[in-house]
Image (tube, rainbow, N blue to C red):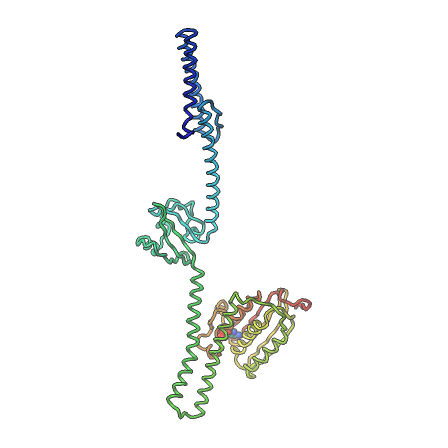
Length: 436
Ligand code: ADP
């Protein structure tokens, strides 16, 4: 037998002792004395049991506030067991509260939304991410039906169809959410939400980029194919006409090469595996070199001026050369013959900057925020004649970003534009600071 079950033995022994003592009293003082003794001791025992029962009742009513008595006889064992039970219970409670606190904290930090509902979709609990994603308020909406709170036709259809093995892509509150319901326990369901706005945006950008790049490559390829077909169909073409065709084919080939070069540059600039390693950048040599190149592009049609008033800096020479070159060649391409192009390198309180000012065709304000988008062109029809790739300003933006700088743009139609590549003051090479 389980030793813990033997707690009745001392009580039985005590009863036997009372009967034994009563028998001795009966033998010594007669039957009446023996009976009275027995009744009295039994009465004392009953009063004692009632006392401890009363104390136990009081403790059960308020276990936290009252201390357990030590007890007597079998009560000692009962009270010590209750005490142990209570101590274990308190320990379990503490562990449970700790787990609950950790669970709550984890749920609060989770970027994904979690809503716990009962089997008929009444909201029981939700975390802050779910509040943000779905516009719920735990305190306000608890106990309400989720379909009354999220009034979106796609979501309602998802609930009606009940195909919870597949997630649903939901457009809600200007976000793209991936939503899924997972049944759990017997009568509960979890609604999980994941914000896919950013990844969808990146996906869309990638799709657009591929579509735009294919479109840009298709135009020169069509031209080249056209001339090749003519050459095949007319083997005895006039040499002068043929030379003209070859020249145009080579221009289109060059255009494709520029485009692919710019796409590779952009990919490299965006790659996190390609960190920027600063080195001394000798501005004067670089800008003079760029000026020589763009003068060839201009073919004497523009008037240039170059002022270098700022210091040398630390940065990536190749990247900065490509960015500055893009700004200056844009000025050449978008300034009609006879226009003026001023280049200025200067230092300011907030850092050095390269300013390119032209008297070209300019553009209105609404284009400024989109200029650095890939393949964005102010004049969609005419711009390809300027032999641009549509990626120049995107490259400028990325190069400046990698150097901690920004691009400033001011322009007015028919008057001209000012592009300013601003670099941080920290990029200035020590001992060569001159302030404007
Ligand atoms: P693109 O190769 O077409 O020049 P960019 O990214 O360099 O591509 O420039 C984007 C657009 O910004 C150009 O298509 C043009 O419409 C406009 N743009 C850039 N620079 C100038 C400028 N100096 N003057 C007027 N428009 C400009």
